[in-house]
Length: 422
Image (cartoon, rainbow, N blue to C red; front, side):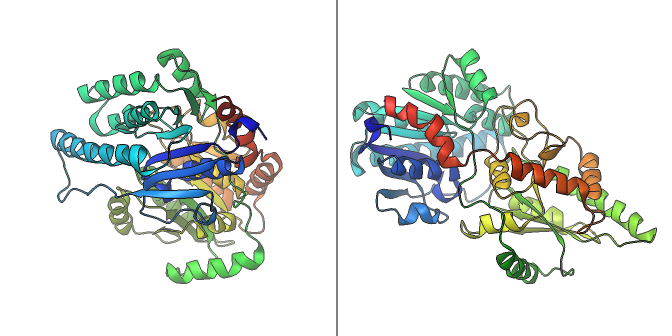
């Protein structure tokens, strides 16, 4: 134990739904294990992990979520206007919480993005309460804004300037990849410690005695025609930095490959169930697109899973699918770490070089760039399922054999020394 952190008070801030912010929940739990007392500040929409709910040394402080617009804004000007209104309201609520509602912390740890208003509010609160400010860089806020407005929009330039200027005032930094560490150092003059996303202890292969009834429950809930389909899970936040259009195209292509395979005789191809989990703004849009498809043996279903059921479903699956198309090119999706922890090989949409830090093609997963490539990979992985799947078996074996540290051990190695120095 690093004695300087013992009995310190730390505020962990995520300006979003705490229940859908696993990395910040993991931070809070790791800090508690290091003997800190933690105030976790964020919005309440979905239930946090049980480890967060049940620890008496960890207190959740919930902000009321911003009101959603009555009418969706289609123009860029309308989007900016409504966003500014929400940002001002959220900023005032967060500042009031950090200044007057919680005890004075020694350290304030904030998630980025969102950069606006989180970074500025965190910096003001840290200086007012004589605390140290630590930023955990998951991505760049300006890059996420560029997905909506375009990279050349003036608001994106202003957001980038703000994020860099305020970010540089923090006392310490964490980030999720070596590629992001290099970007922060060379372009922004910020020195960050890489803290990779790693699976929590709850992620592991699901025991057969639990897997069978779980799969039966899913089959009944989702009204599936096949008794034992291949289960492919794609966790999602349903945002602009995930490309489900690739999956829809690949599903049509793969279904056609399966149809021709079955028509040629021989062993019938198994049904493929794609379970698309999570909540987010684009879910309804893609649900409509899914309903318009006419497929025979490929089934696409959306489902919200609780924090307790999510690791069990991952551990019961046959393959993980990552459709993350990075806004910045330097972030890494935590879902990949979760899937590896559950023993799942991953098919991942390519955006090198950052993705290659975790997913190694033909070793612990397969990387694809087009829908045609994904369709072919799926067909080859499962054409003799479940008895003769040499590619899938080799990938899964490599995932299990090369699984590195879990979150707690990685946090102690990489993040604890940073907090102990503050």
